[in-house]
Length: 411
Image (cartoon, rainbow, N blue to C red):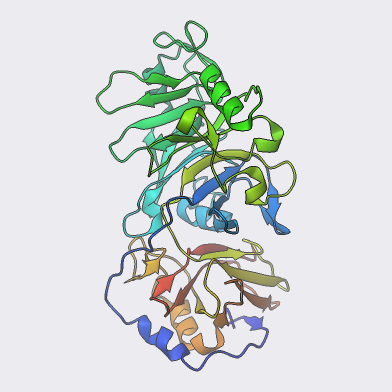
């Protein structure tokens, strides 16, 4: 059973599940998984789907050349990080992620995530770049700082794309054309929404790295036809070549493709709109090169109600891996146990966790031939209105952990 008040559909667990239980007592700290450099992490402009499953526009999707795209930062993980910002008793689910960057994290993957929002929400501005921390999202670079860097004359900008290099250099693009006292793109005194800007630490102002017309030329070269791309939607840095990676608003059959500035403009192999496999009308709203690597956990609902069926899905594993679904009433800022993948077990060692640990033999799932597994739970009629944090751990091929997800039961 997933929770003491739920009714789990029977499933037999493996005989060596005791190995996982004993792993919780291990004190060695392991480094996060290595990541293939060509893996991309993206967000969409609107809700879509992957293989028939919904993808919300604030969720982050990982895709590798030749691989299957999957949600690795579901809304329920982002909500766990954000917490109750408005004081209404529920964790905040941001409306849409408009810019995205992932660096090598600290103790867990949380420490490497940066994002900007489509609109002002919960005290954050659409021109702020936020950094995730175990204590919540904080402003990394404020809208006012970006306004100063470009000499904005109207005092109101929206960051539409963002890349942070290891040396602190920033690349960024804006959601709208902005009048500037410092910079000129294709038009004198204006920064266009298709311009790619750059700022290095210590510089008094930003500079235009590529104008909108130059980006148009690179997209045209990549597609072999004259194209007006409209707006730069996402930015990243190729860690091998140093080329700038980007996504654009148009044409519609490539608004979910990743382009590169290499060679005067090219599509990134294996990262075109057709490769991702999204449903119709998908458009990339943000992108970054993925730096974290972990098996992902998603849920059918972040607010399941009494009498409903809750489905927990694990993806991105190898076939035949054994995973244990655990839960607690809260999560910890620092890992309770360092593990591969997410970076550690972050569930609080509270009374619910102790109950789950004692029932671990009934909580095992084994991944199928695609590296996925499903855990189904029928919630009983007496589900209290409480928050529960769920995370899965595995003993092989190394001690590993998934992302945690927040369930707001009965709310």
